[in-house]
Image (tube, rainbow, N blue to C red):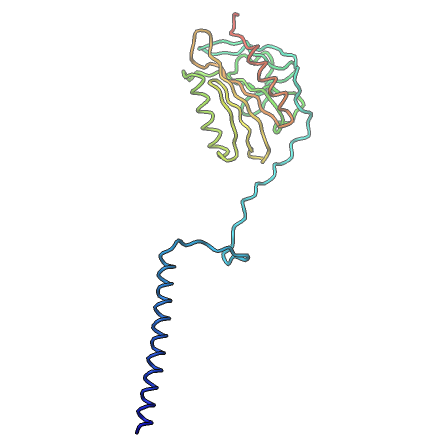
Length: 233
């Protein structure tokens, strides 16, 4: 009987100690869990993440330019009358270049050029697409050059996508560098001119070409602006 009582007391002691240990461990882990839950989470670096990471998008390379000699500065200029009911102009263009319809690229004889309100000038042996050119158009929209600039920016970025168009602008001009529909890198500069004593644009000009043509485009763009004259001056 004494042995039984002693055994019972020992069992109770063991259970008490064990239960205390279990309770203590559980309280400690709960405390740790609560402390961890209340802290600031921070991601752990992983050498092999289980979620795939998308690579950055790649940009397709530009298509090759056409094989044609680049435009060079220093061209001699000829003159061509153009105009409308708002303003008549004497338009400069590179001597020896032919005039073509826009659109259509049909050659226009010299004696008929003054009857057109838009012409594209380019070398006679140049391919229709992919080279360089000067385009001149009379306009009668009764808006300022600055308004024409803003509208051209809207049209070009809408047509080719804002991500594929870079441009810089002034109050009367804008220069675009963009990826065209043939995946080629193109340069296209525009400028609008108002007649004497007028704030309304009555003439639009643009030059277009390749990266290789850039020095010639810059020179032609500047020379056109300095050489353009209202008719009668």
